[in-house]
Image (cartoon, rainbow, N blue to C red; front, side, top):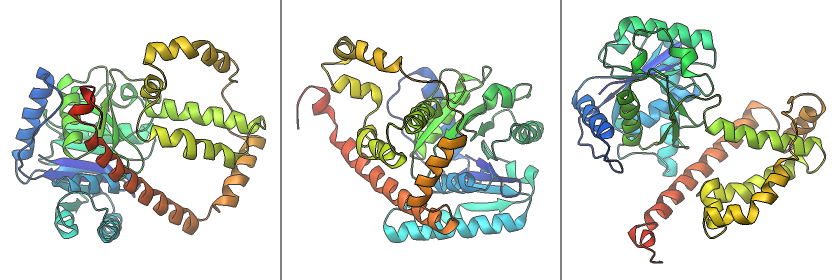
Length: 372
């Protein structure tokens, strides 16, 4: 199977090529998923094909590392050779640091993973043989549309065209393309190497097999894909995230809590719980099931929700107040921000390991009502 990842330093793309492997798909017996698994197995059995990545910025490089960790061959594309050279140097540096700290993903060594990543400044040559293309350019609708129009002219009928967009609707990106049935959004969470969630969002005309093949690929490389049944502004993650940010902004603006205390409510309160279970399971466990929770708390929830204010402007006095508080804690200068990001990524990696360990504890005995 070949994967192409497209990113932007200049105007970048990248391709990934998987090695032949035996795949096992767990958790769904649907005909569509079985067919997707069969197709993905065929894709991956094709040696010397590429997984193509377009744009090699932060997201593009992280995607390349994720695919390589999964044993897939990746090709990065950019019009500027220097950008590609810098990307490879950055990827090597990050992998070495991860290996030294014991957080390198996959079973392959750094050198083995790096050997799977190649680069190209020729778009047509880069996508040749690819079965999956991941675009990672900035959130600019016209730029992304231009790239997909170019790809539409040179790809075959079995290539998946995927975008990393975090907010642009598939209907705005892909409508009018000849290969629209092969188009989909695969939205990662920044940074995707440390946070495995991927939102898979179809265009209204996306073929179901495209969704299932993309889902199967993301599972194969160790990500945690979720399938949206239809497109919606902000997808799911950002709708939830913006709801929290919006209320946090209002609470600070109304003087209910300081920006620092507000963040503490999440990091030492809700965030600790939500790192393992979501809001719906939280409801389920905080009472004798969902129905009992609603019976107990629906009136209180509605009362609180009715006090929520309008959508904030995210500007003016409140912006200055939040900016001052955050800058006092973490000065907004590159070196300090990079140090804090590195610390965040190390925390996320440790959390990912803990989640994996704890997930393995939640086994058949629990599901049958037995306790451990």
